[in-house]
Length: 183
Image (cartoon, rainbow, N blue to C red):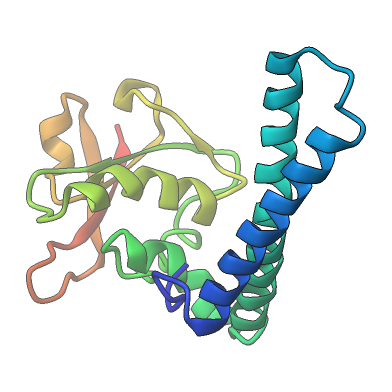
């Protein structure tokens, strides 16, 4: 998630250390207590699994609380934009498309080599999938009613298209997003 610390702060480290102490204690108690009469290997595996689980609890609980504290303060715009921004996609590239694409029509979203980031090329069809719902995404341009192209000319996809229009003009190093109706 955007904005969350990449590593634990002092409290997180303290929770990790507390977890280690509790985990070691759980292993010792289990080994000397309820697992005493068991065979060594199954008892050791179970005690170790219990110790690891107990060791994670303080840090896991702290991390959930920290994540919730951060994410509940986000406004709607930040929530909508977090995923696209992390994949180097401006979150508003498809804002004009829903009003142009009738519900019930199919589309293919294609990202091309003019996009500088591979992760953006991979994520663009998924962004379209979420932003254009309930319209139906298809993988093959020949089965689509519309083509949404970013960084590639829709006329180069091997299907005849018409009514080609720019729906996002691009910016800096990013090409425009183009919408075209399959003829």
